[in-house]
Image (cartoon, rainbow, N blue to C red; front, side):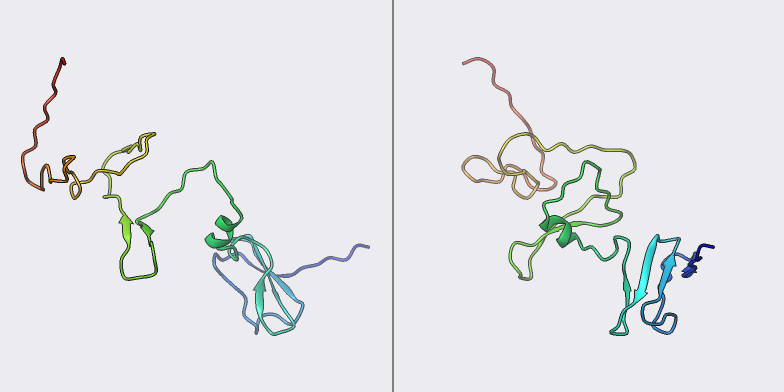
Length: 139
């Protein structure tokens, strides 16, 4: 007759066992989160299955790539050059329709209302200024 193993289990999302729930070497499964936990010999409950223990730093350090979209929900991309008080935030306004912003296949600086300059470095227009474009044909 086969032996039946029946570990402690939960069907509640984010439910993690405590040291009072497990004895050393015992395991528990959270079926909602698809994670396995165990109590080690140092009296810690550790996750032994699932991806929650992996950090973004560990993923990028291994050179991992994805062919899937990365969706940020009410979040920014923050660029930190050096560890100081200044950062650059890439933020999207809450859209009211589907939009696409395409970065061209060229090297250069992205032009914003704060750096819209002439070749000599003069500001072409500030916020609220009228702006006209001239196109010259011929030689």
